Length: 338
Ligand code: NAD
Ligand code: DAU
Image 1 (cartoon, rainbow, N blue to C red):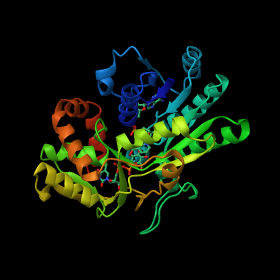
Image 2: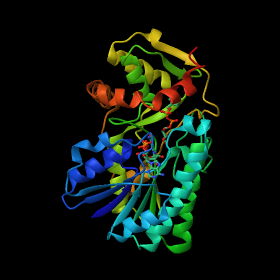
Image 3: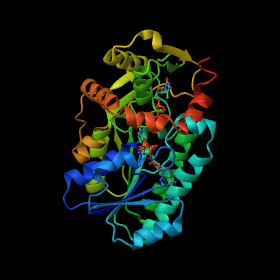
């Protein structure tokens, strides 16, 4: 199977490519990635010389480039991870989110349709469903009600995928997953930010009261789900993936401090995220039933392994935090932490 993977130098895409090459001898991958602030060649340094792997730097919005790559196939499938992915950045500036997440998806859909690709996987998110109250779970039938510019842009992309399937019979599936954690996650997201800050005795900025709930899933389980949707999903269908593992942000914060033997005095309550979704929780029963998928990583051991990974990869973190990251951090947290 020959795959065009977009956004493969980011967190989930890099884990996905590594798993595909390790799990299947007959898979080859072209990875198209723009190397934005979130894209990092170091994430795939261990497989860069594998003869089944090729990296192309470029923008999914560039139709000429995408056509050129697809014409060098034939490709069996396109798996679209490329996105602006951080909610807080979308609140600071939604422009890149509209461009990459919506226009980029449209360009890929048109190019893949032109190249008669047999399977397109749109990697989406549970955030398209908006926020839950204290109870209930998101199913694939839950109405789309995005809250942030990030989730609105992902929803628009999902609707384009839906429309291409409906109008043209385009062979696409959409996956919607809850919050991932694990190795190679950019330290702007809650878990790697708090691990890396706590390791250096820096403040942990908890938004609001810290009672918001997320359903955490290890990135390996998400990658297994995308693989199942790629190989066994039905055209036009949506598949939810979640960890059935709800935690408040404060519970996550306490667990990280405990694993690192750091004091609770590092916790700083800061101004809440505007429009902050209260709770996400996923009903994955369709994926369990139709794709024979179940999450396998237990959260306590997964979090401990993740904390260990970040401690063993302090150079990886330091490299990221020495660059553009500092001006982002100042803009996002400077006043909040004063
Ligand atoms: P990430 O920010 O770590 O990586 C995104 C990657 O996309 C980077 O390598 C970046 O360089 C690349 N990219 C950005 N714009 C591009 C463009 N115009 N052209 C080509 N490449 C471009 O993101 P992630 O956390 O790995 O998320 C990957 C996908 O999974 C996203 O679509 C996201 O919406 C979705 N998702 C993420 C989570 C999560 O918890 N992180 C959960 C569910 C779904
Ligand atoms: O649910 C899937 C989504 O999960 C993905 O689509 C997104 O790409 C991914 O970024 C993630 O979105 P969240 O906004 O839920 O993740 P984040 O790690 O930014 O925040 C998790 C929770 O932690 C959220 O309630 C906000 C809170 N938080 C986050 C940061 C960065 C804090 O309290 N302080 C922080 O500094």
